[in-house]
Every structure is written in structure tokens, then in C-alpha cells.
Amino acid sequence: MMQTAGNILLFLSLLTAVYLFKLTFLQKMPGGDYGVGYAWALLFSMAVFWICLSLVAGIIGFQGGFGWLSLGRFPEVECWSCVS
Picture 1: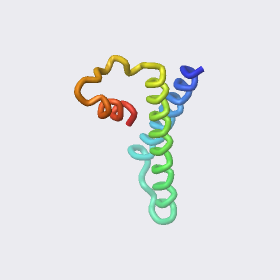
Picture 2: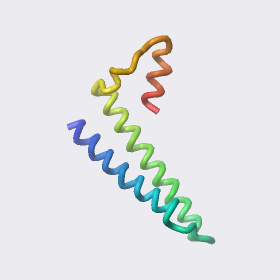
Picture 3: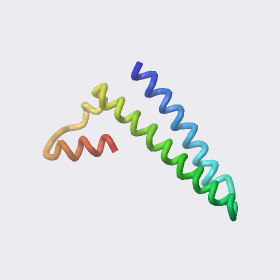
């Protein structure tokens, strides 16, 4: 169940990444009021992308997928770097 949810979130983040690529590289930024909507679309897309990948990282960590990382001198720092 968790693996299916992770795959769905990865697919959603892929779609969001393609949309972000389209917004930033293939489209000219509009001016005026359209520019404000463009900026909000960019911000919300980045938020969706970040949330999806954070949830995927959480699912991977919950299932022990980050077990290959060594918890040497600074275990709490490495743990937080995996989450973020």
C-alpha cells in the first residue's frame, strides 16, 4: 500500500516537474495581472513538488530505505538531511 502511494506521489511530482519546466523555460513571463497569476502558479507548483517528494522520502524512510546510510558521528544531522 505504501509503495503504491509512493509511486503515485512520484508520478505526481514528475507531472509537476514537467509543468515547472514548461513555466520556466518554454513560456515567456506575462506582464501585468497575468504576471501575478504566473508567479502564484509557479509558487504553488513548487510547493506541490516539494510536498510530494518529502512524502516520498518519508515513505522510503519509514520502510527502512535509508538503512544504507551510516549513522556515524552525527546521527541526528544525517537523519534530518534524509528528511529534507
